[in-house]
Image 1 (cartoon, rainbow, N blue to C red):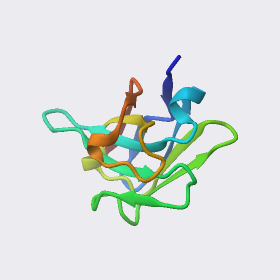
Image 2: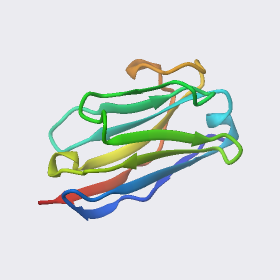
Image 3: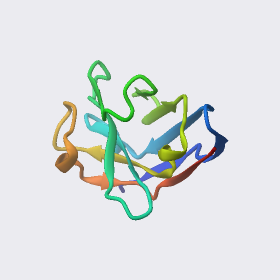
Length: 124
């Protein structure tokens, strides 16, 4: 059974913070690279952050660098996205995804499983 369940989205004012969590089934998480995508209305899905299985390697979209931090707790099969200094342009549905084909940092096309998404809305 493969399952990815996001939580932590919501409404926040510009400049605020949110912490997203993604609880995964073992099949989707063990030895897998993980990532967070987002998709705003009328826009393509964007890979925001990715992390290797070990957690030692991370990568970010330019829009997320310096503001977002991806991390994981391998004992709890959970990946996180800490988002600070949020801006209205960060408004989107955020999706957790896993790449069981690689334990390294996954690229956009490397992902195999997706969650249902959690809405993040940033008001100005």
